Image 1 (cartoon, rainbow, N blue to C red):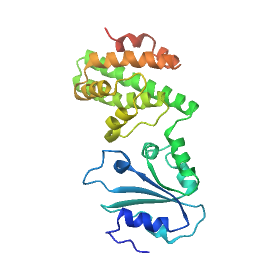
Image 2 (spheres, rainbow, N blue to C red; image 1 turned 90 degrees about the vertical axis):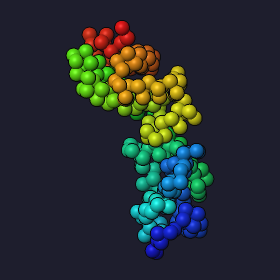
Image 3 (cartoon, rainbow, N blue to C red; image 1 turned 30 degrees about the horizontal axis):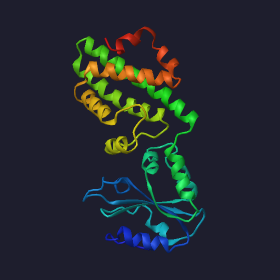
Image 4 (tube, rainbow, N blue to C red; image 1 turned 180 degrees about the vertical axis):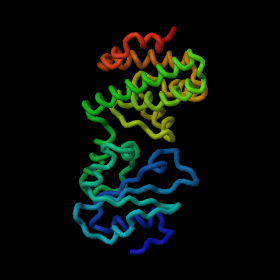
Length: 245
């Protein structure tokens, strides 16, 4: 089967739906996020095949044009996608187009959208320590007259901060493109999304130490409340440097 460059999303969905080997179609990316698609957006589609199924659709694996990107996988491969991995958020917010498993495709997506308790706890411990490390280095560099190093460490801290906050809520962190969308539609408990984005913007732009310390104080309270105080206590006498003055 040769795929023309002009193959459209609708035409492919009709083709795949007619193929009994296809057990699921899952749309991800900007087309799956209400209000995020632009004139440049293509359709990113997972094509899920029954394990061991024979189909000519496999010849379209890797098909990628300005109109349509296809990822063709077996059901077993689909279950494993993003677990762990970069695709997890994309699949967590993906949209089911076809589900021949009586809701099984939707259940697989729901499992990707929710971190297990132990998984989330381990992730939060790691991201909390990384966040504290970046904040500490940024504030120390600012104190010692190294503004560029301070700003670089501050910018690095933002990644750790966001990973941590979403892990505390047992969710995969959204891609930067969808961060504002995610916070507006699925707020983090205890956080004003718009205010958080303003602080993150300030930290990235200038490394503002006062903002970093204020954020750290809120994170410390949230982390201790969630049972991660041991990670913070390991910082010992360095903690005061990160806290508000």
